[in-house]
Length: 301
Ligand SMILES: Cc1cc2nc3c(=O)[nH]c(=O)nc-3n(C[C@H](O)[C@H](O)[C@H](O)COP(=O)(O)OP(=O)(O)OC[C@H]3O[C@@H](n4cnc5c(N)ncnc54)[C@H](O)[C@@H]3O)c2cc1C
Image 1 (cartoon, rainbow, N blue to C red):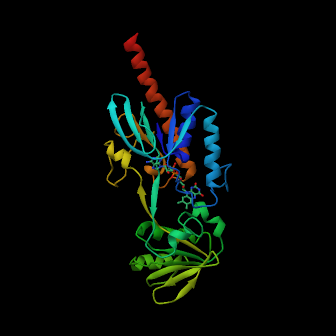
Image 2: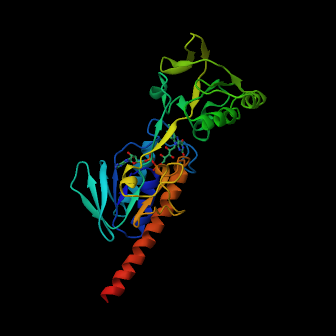
Image 3: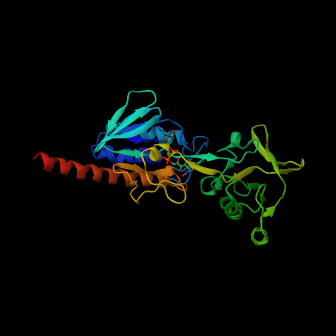
């Protein structure tokens, strides 16, 4: 059973389907990059629309007999050794011998008017995904709740444009941080950010509470990354000190028969890394099932 049909879940399904395992993928249909028109940095798929990428993946999977269902998984519980019951929101429950959770994460943006509406278009977070497209343009970096990420972003994005303004907003900068930003050529504009200004469906600038508007054509922001890991926590998977479910390098969680891959356990995985994690987990899951197949065959021989 694979829960979540983004890059991680579908790639795991590809490996397991080609290994002739019986696989069901259930997907709620909200991949993280859905607001973006194009996906970048995925070799041979650079610039592809996220929806087309997943549709093509699903088409490939069907060729190997993988079943794909649309809808949410509401819960997973162990019903015996090597048996899980998977409760589906809109369909009868199904049973599975092993489970891969690839449900991704949620990006929580700072509460600034206009950000959510422009998210994935001209309000973005990842320069490796979007930096090239906004190169050499006037860029804003907003301080948010994710302090280290925002400070790193401000310094990093200067690599794509010589015109970068950092709006610390709620972040108090110390002297060292100010010096580093100044040395890097990043201008700092203090003051509470009121909203991003949009005109004719284009981002025009950042408006401060005191009424000033600084013209910009793209905004980078550091979201808070919230893993959609409720199913893993309900299963009792161990959580690390950083508050994220822990896995071994193959994606195996602390609960026997339960794997996790992609953004649900790794906030920094871009699409190709999530896909890679899905491939690794798919192979590990197959080896897990093989070991159980052999145990069973020996016991019944
Ligand atoms: C705006 C934006 C732009 C991005 N652009 C790029 C880019 O250009 N290049 C790049 O490499 N990366 C990009 N990323 C990152 C990329 O989105 C992630 O790396 C990738 O989506 C991670 O894949 P995943 O399979 O882990 O999760 P997701 O793609 O988020 O897939 C998870 C799936 O699980 C489903 N799901 C969740 N809960 C349940 C449930 N209970 N039951 C059933 N299904 C469930 C969701 O609906 C979703 O379809 C971008 C991210 C954002 C926010």
